[in-house]
Length: 206
Image (cartoon, rainbow, N blue to C red; front, side):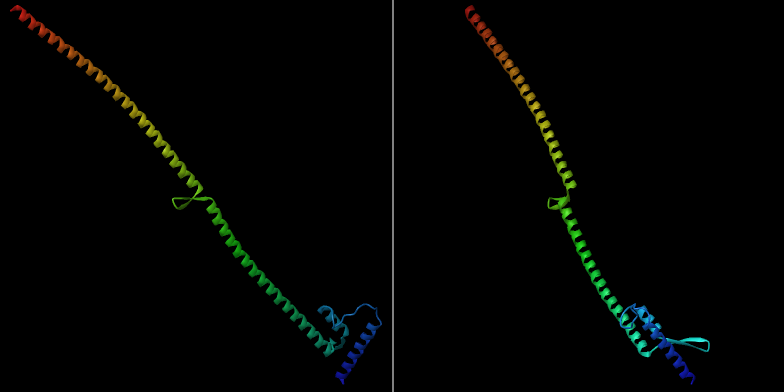
């Protein structure tokens, strides 16, 4: 009897709540067929009856509404899980795309570095060297050749001076030789005349 009295009280309260809801304002009421989970819980709360027993308050909820709410909660959780799975797939796809872009960026950076190094380098005796090294080597060779040219010119002029000096000495020697030969010839001629004169004198004296 006590159990049936509790059900009767709960049914009476539930009926009173429904009558009050029907006579209230025309604002949209919470429903188990739509709305948020919070509004559906609010609907369950509004549609439930309550009573007190042993100093405690109890809520009486229809099993059909509770099953409907459980199904809605499960559907919401499944939808959230599906959405999370889709978002995870999108995140994974984005991560793969980012990894691919990073790989392409790294490859492009390497190619750019190689092109820059090739642009800033030149071939010297079959080896790739930087432009700075190439310029230093080239100007060193040019300076070395220029110094060799100056040394050659100096040696040539020095040799020319020595040659001219040798020619001058040779000319002086030839002149001196001609003078000596001329004096020797004159002395020989003078001696020959003196000898001839002596011979003539000797012949005349006989």
